[in-house]
Image 1 (tube, helix red, strand yellow):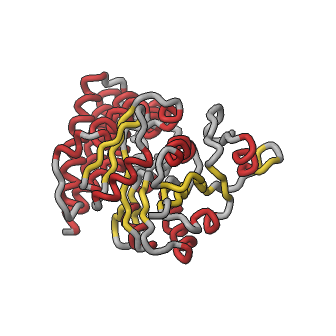
Image 2 (cartoon, rainbow, N blue to C red; image 1 turned 90 degrees about the horizontal axis):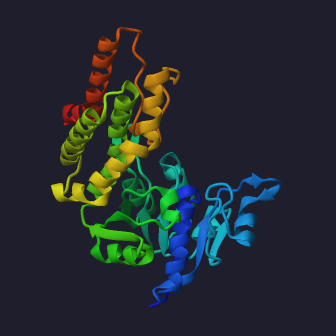
Image 3 (cartoon, helix red, strand yellow; image 1 turned 45 degrees about the horizontal axis):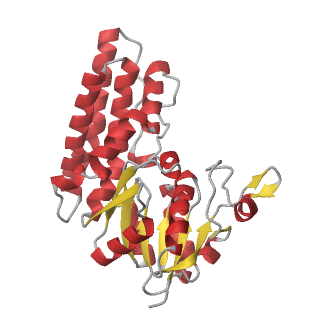
Length: 332
């Protein structure tokens, strides 16, 4: 069987961290082509092209400075050139660009290609909510798995121990991706509930906003723990309504579920923006958190007494956790 060519579609902080792992792992296995393509959105850094810097200095100086990328990871500025000949596609780009990108690369996708999405988020369109993996699957007509977990990119790049979860409808594909991505410090569990794994990666950001509200109001750790617990219950309930396949509670005990939820509720960007929102009220109510359409900040409440403000924000937290599930129930 010929070695499979790998292309990493995306080169930000997370994409570059994953490139470190993939670049090393492909050289240790006969299953994969030893050279890895990485699509890089071209930028000028101090008068030099970012792709030139990566290919000569083997470092993404803008998005992952201080970390050396393997020399077999080749930065390519044209996404259609990057995916040519690739049999394994690793998607690591902001979710709002995925549909247009898939349209670009579709003519260059060959039979037998498989993909894995590391993109956390849900797309919202005229037909309602859609998983990112479903968009890739429909547009490229390939099998798509997902990877989600408590994986802060900088810590993965620093090779600090963590776990992650691969959701794969096809068991054989899941094992291929595990071989491609697992290291002693990046431990992978493969489960078959791909949609549940992917939903966890998006919904946990909504709960993190509630956790940020708690921090901004000084509610304390007891209240924050309650929000996390209630949020996890909402995530389970939403998944059972949204997914057409099986949804088991054990999947939420994997890294994609409770572990990622805890990490995000204590250190994620959504928590930070929600805390700043409460403390300053300077953020626009239309400002979107890192999940884009899947997580929006509420309009700041009118000035009021401390107790009424706390009640208002507690109501906001509850609404934040329940609104999408209620809307889905109404549609059905």
